[in-house]
Length: 608
Image 1: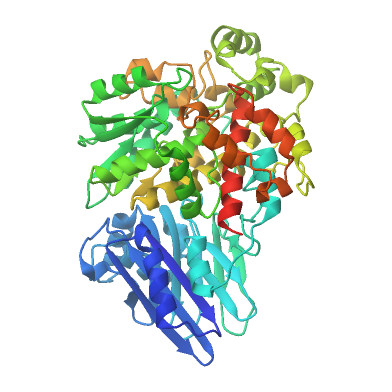
Image 2: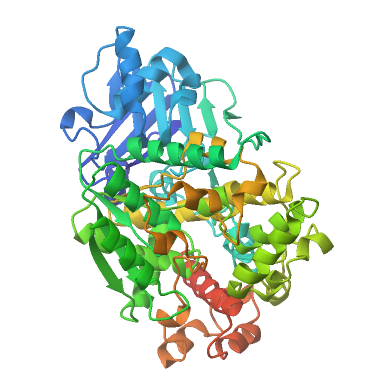
């Protein structure tokens, strides 16, 4: 994991600008910072890199890294680099390092832009040809590693973070009020429906996309990979279980590769506990795990966490939430993120990253996207019932929902098991209270809810939208920045191409059974994951209530956030916000709104 930045165009960037940018990149890579500059005719190219050493810790793998006329700056990990390297060695290619960076660049030299088809991993990289002046940028299939860009008449700026573009260009980017309105009214799941960011003119290269700049030609953005749902109707339940186990263990195998110790984020759910258990039991890894504990019983998962700790024998660190300095922490996070923090979950995650850093780790594992791959949300149960309505076992599925699932559902909208039979296109729960919150906006410019079309299956289409346009992109954005603030690489084993391809082929009737979401995943972990966690139906999630983090009734909070002269009240009604602040405690959907409002206010103050 590292930081990259660069520019290609007619402008000349002086040494002071380049060094100042490297300073800003330090958190992403404190082990080595360097830039290189090139020019062909009137086109100048600058490549900047900050390194967090994970694989091959020697200086020989520092970047920018050069082979012949090719120069690379790379953020991420190519997890299957060992296998890829062996293939090239068998073809007579020699290597000078033991890094994945050299393997990546050798594959580009041999296969050009098609090299990405061979990679399993997370990446954002730039490769420059010093002879032709061609610049090639690429981002991984899931969008785990960020890559922003900004085009001017004179060239293109790019980087891992928006602040790097600001530093290189010297431009004060203006806030994107439409994106702020989306965030306030529709919530975080609306933020990745397109390529807009919280700043006008700055875009993010999409997941599974390449960007090519060739002198004298227009830049080209090309999608090199598109996810598909190709269900194998002949697959049996036992085949689904065995295949899931195989692919997840293999994903863990290649993601445990590192020349530094690894840490694990552990909640009370199946997802992260499965990763800890696989590492400890399948690979005999000496696991170090970390958890956040909330005093709010709705989110406290201590019993399940300790069950996993006891079962695996891992060394564990618990962190308790409190009010201390949380407003200052929030301001710091927003400034570093160059955006509002999406939810309280990610605010809390920053505390976890801080403790992992203090404990001396550079890499942390998380269970991101198991919910999206294996039916982990309550609306998945209802969509599943809709799909099973003509199935011979439909009544059994319905009885399971009443007996095991419905009693845990907090959202009243999702308590009706026939919801999608009656209204198949119902999606209001995705953007909680969006109609009401949109009414608070002074001048709404946001579009209504829309889904991308991956498949005719309502359930599988919902899951793919969550994975590529709603939930996962935000999680990855926040996890990357929270981790990088403390110079930590985040790894997500559920985001494995082979695992996704297999999960997307599992017949829907296998995904939810006996009142269990993620049934196939749970069964695949039998004998590895402890039974208390494996069989726990109640979903709490890695979360925290806003009242565990901020005293919303304190004069300091009220005076600061409800100041009518604040810029935020040019886009949202002051009286409406005051009414919500007076709710004590606020219902869940209003609690989320309060947190979004607090973030938007601070973000606008920092970017005027």
